[in-house]
Image 1 (cartoon, rainbow, N blue to C red):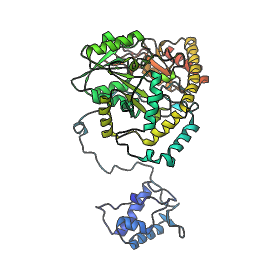
Image 2 (cartoon, rainbow, N blue to C red):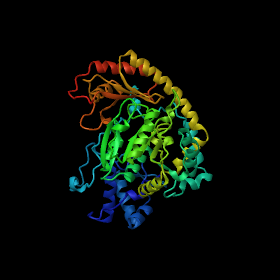
Image 3 (tube, helix red, strand yellow):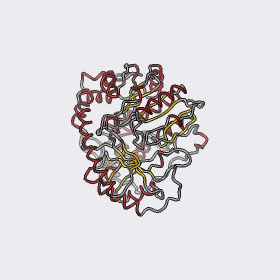
Image 4 (cartoon, one colour):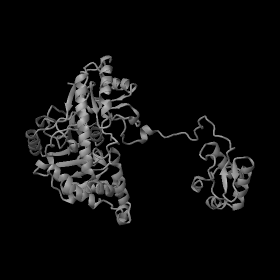
Length: 495
């Protein structure tokens, strides 16, 4: 296949004849490394048409490059970059332009500078990856996912894959969520009350944009999902962190002027606390008295392998004030980026309009593939397989944590895929993470989960969804050894 003819262009300020300009253009492409040895150049006819010059001009330029060993000719096959062409220099090419824009003034609103931590892209190469939220490829049903993707590419589903739904979603996926997924959480919803999103984070962003203004107040858990805190700060609303206890967010601690309450009652992030039924009802009553809305992020409810999950807060809601956020990214694989919002029709109508103005809808092929995977029973089989593996890993984790004297600060009552850990108060877990990384161990420091001026520095999270069970004990041993050698942080832990 020839190099795309669109990659060739003549600079409007270039000097010399057209023939010399074409020679220089191709020679510079070879010298810069853009054109590699043995790559085929466009035919003289196609390049001439593209550049708007005569074919003989291109032919002469090719002939000169052939004579200088930049190109070689292969019979009737055309012209190729020669094996003997000059090799690109190993030094960096000089900058062709200077950025003269004062970006400190040009940028009207900043979105960078948050505390969201980065995870190594090569996390799977580490021997002890206690990384939260990553999938174990040995557990995922790749064969059936591939078959579902091929089925979604078939002629029968061609319209569903290629149609611009504008602001709508795949009806098959919406039907499955309404008839199968939500009833498992005790929730009943009509199709017009459900919206597909690009994961739970996108759902939270859409919700914040629709519900919050600079005059409104949001209450969120502390510690909490750090990306949610960034979303709320970017919305420019008033944000109040409410410190959680062993049962989640205390309703009485929520300020009376709060407009929207963000919570993870079934599986608090990151402490794994489960809110009991009495407090759930108290939270609903508190929101009703204040006239506030509640946004429930019900992540990881599928990983309840110890006992059945608690009913969703949305299932107890009689006033329509709870907005429910669900996601398939944790139970299928994080790169899927597929979630959903459930709420009253007037709310979903506004969120749908906002989504349409930003991205219209998540890709139709992904939605249809997921709907097949779910409806054909592959999803339920995957959840059962994951539950067995996570249960085994959790048991191994608990035994290793006790053996090596590590301390659990929070663990899911129903299951989950992580432990919230507490190191001695003098340990800075960000420094600890850097030290452990050199030993092949990955952990997640806890500081980014806390808001306010007094952020705890001695907490960390250990995920067990992506580490083989046979490596858990040895990895925990490395963590315990690193903690025993850790220097004092010099920072005061949060209360």
